[in-house]
Image 1 (cartoon, rainbow, N blue to C red):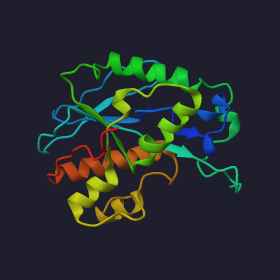
Image 2 (image 1 turned 180 degrees about the horizontal axis):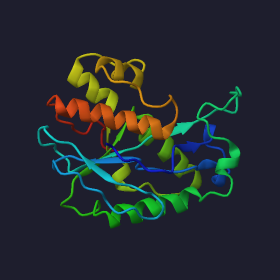
Image 3 (image 1 turned 90 degrees about the horizontal axis):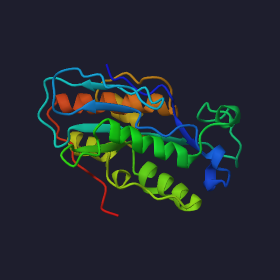
Image 4 (image 1 turned 135 degrees about the vertical axis):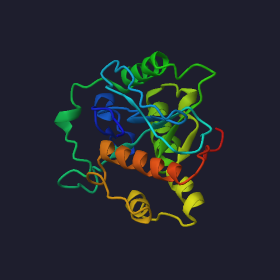
Length: 219
């Protein structure tokens, strides 16, 4: 069972809107599973992230100790989408921590979990390059915030799936689940549900013997 953060999807406004408080619902590593061990290991939740590690058994050793599954979601002001695409409304975002505060909490969480130890190899996993190539760097640039080095390398699950299965998942998670005979979890464009699907797809590919590697190019 992949245990995920209870904080839900991350939501940034379209076109990098200037209101920082509107920019963040939550930033996640939203699901983490351990790449080497066959023992289920629950990690201590910290700073409201409620994270836990879940191990996968019977799969080849991976290049990383930990995979950190991340998904951002954005909706549109123009054209208006009713109801909102992500299921997140403004009231859920108002009064929440700013992006700077959230990034600080993420860094504290990474340190507390030992993920900043040079001997521990971890990497973020996203469904596409947009999350960490476009969205986070763009928002950080707009707000004058630095981007931590650990956000600058990632695995694009679409590319990993295409390497493993020999076909490109045009419709993203829906196609990957279909290709692997997996049932889609939750609803599309829910950040937390997308993370559950990403983790489930990774687990299935790993059980089939696929070795994950970084797909992003150095910044």
